[in-house]
Length: 298
Image 1 (cartoon, rainbow, N blue to C red):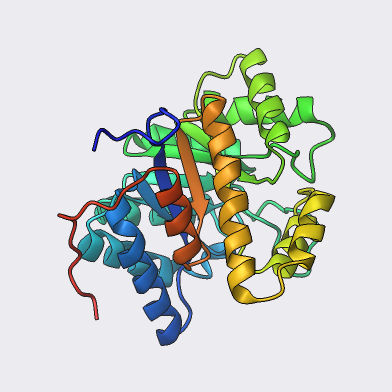
Image 2 (cartoon, rainbow, N blue to C red):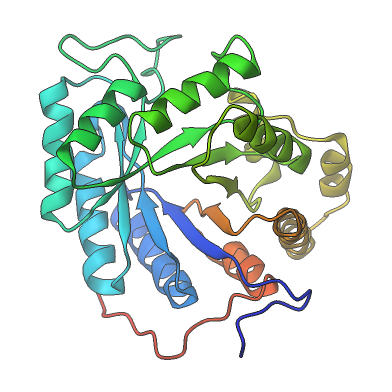
């Protein structure tokens, strides 16, 4: 194998996002997903982090298990919500002690019952200040969020990109985007970032659709448009098999079009489910590495 896909382009670098499980059954589902996807050789995987550290222990446990049992590079998420600066940086130091030297630094969503982000007493003002503090530690590659369809709180795209540039100038390595379903949104956003002087990578965040109705509700909550043709397509997907075939085809075509536009890295939101992501990656020419084995964490 020469590492190329059928259309002649090199296979993409890939990464995956997982979330920390809440129950023993969910832990099993996470580990099954990690085992399924690890042989694809991701550049890294990330583990999310609840607002105010609500999943801190579970996030740490998931990072440790993935590192030790799957031998993958792990990025821990970190947010500003509901914690002092000292508390947030203590988590960052804990990541470093685990050998986790990549962080996805986020301001974080407002806690339940609040409409807007509020600075915690003694906490970070937002993601720019968080990135600055992490960069000063000198121990991390720092990834941040970007929004091709615009952040819901941004006044306009120009202001959104200016804020993104401040985060990157503060020391971030690159950005991973919110999910999007219209590649034109990402490509316009990427071009606007380049025009603003941004040179760091803007990695597309891809969500293969496990449940269309739930995905629509989530997309609406974060201001991501869902095109009309997708509603019509999923209306005609009568059973689980046709739904999954459609989802695989849509995500594969989306990624293939992005790669044709020069995209080299793809970040997949797995929802701790592996099969659709695995099939999309295979369709893009990413082959499992037979020599990869993972120790059992059971």
